[in-house]
Image 1: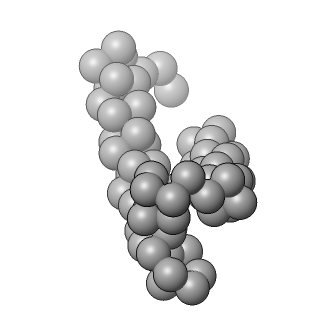
Image 2: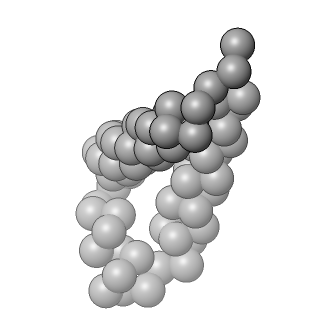
Length: 70
């Protein structure tokens, strides 16, 4: 089955939107599971460990979304 350019762009936009929504949900869940406020720790206190935790969660979620697209 051959797709048109517009169908491919639409599919890519939907998957990108889904990825952003999943990332926000994952961030909220991760914030609830960790003590303190994760965003406050990263942005104001410059907590490297919290930033590494969030970065690894972002990478893992990206791998999952990419596998779902593939």
